[in-house]
Image (cartoon, rainbow, N blue to C red; front, side):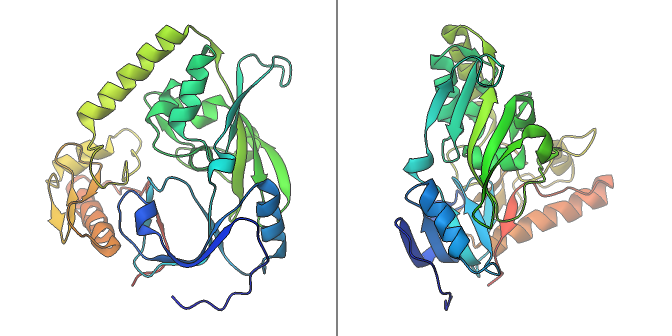
Length: 305
């Protein structure tokens, strides 16, 4: 991908034509025209303020819930690194709510839930099972094992495409299933979550139960993207896929997992085109079999080869 973008000066790291395959779980896909890893919040804001407003911007977390198409991603991909991977507790009274965690946008679900456990904050155990960062699961209303971000989020700090920093209460995100109204190009840089008082041992037991359940039912050690399709009202996506005869179905180097049929796998050297085409074939077969149209849960970004 040739790039002629004029970019503002930065203190962090800017890489042209940066390979994205190593940064996403599927280990497939093209390059970012530019990859920006800001040094800190000021660096991010200054960069976005100075960047031509016509240049597209996309945030990348742990790359778990994403297909990067083989033609790559135009504009700037922003990845929040260690400077944003922090979790603090907030004292009682700050929000009028007990048991609040203040988290950087680059903190993982495992870090957030572990910090909650260490401080006796229950109700955030489900975040242990979301393979992403705070920025990603706040944007997507991530959820699992009976919990959703909308149930525990108080508010979030967001850098808009203009570089402006705003704090949005949970109500402003208009959450629905795996969706928020966060503006395009906005980057979640921090969020506050609330829980309830709990015993660290009991919280750990629940986290262990979730962990064991995931290990038993999901292909965690494979090149995958997590849950592929949203659960339609009244249905489980994996069951519809299974009933349509798609368990183990393969196209190129991509395969429907035999362990959990709502997971697609890169079982060899799959291209992103292989993975996406397999997903579309699964959607076609499910529609033909059950009349239900599956919606993608995995984000598909960039341009085809």
